[in-house]
Length: 151
Image (cartoon, rainbow, N blue to C red; front, top):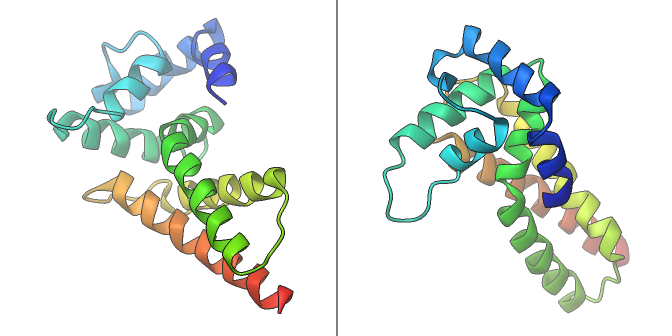
């Protein structure tokens, strides 16, 4: 996903979309690429999250009808998705459920995409926290269904 994102974020098309976004979301003015927007959202621990929250809210508003904005948010969630894949794999194996790696990744990525779609256009105080929580709830539900079926 990181390689794909590099290709998407560095292209002229995505830079053009960013210029269009600025008309609707002035806070995005000054960013040269969607990659820079991603960096503003993914603030390292210990740094001020104020700009991250505002930029995330702007991108969520755009994600209502812009697939690039949704893809940017999915890219922000890659570390969370990765951790949840490993966590779910451990839980499923402990329950005796055999699951294909690709199936598991698809399940978690799907949950992340659904979480993004469910929040698109909405205003949340801490949007990344809400995205993470919604994704985890969806994954937990699907994981429980796999465990129930295996029994």
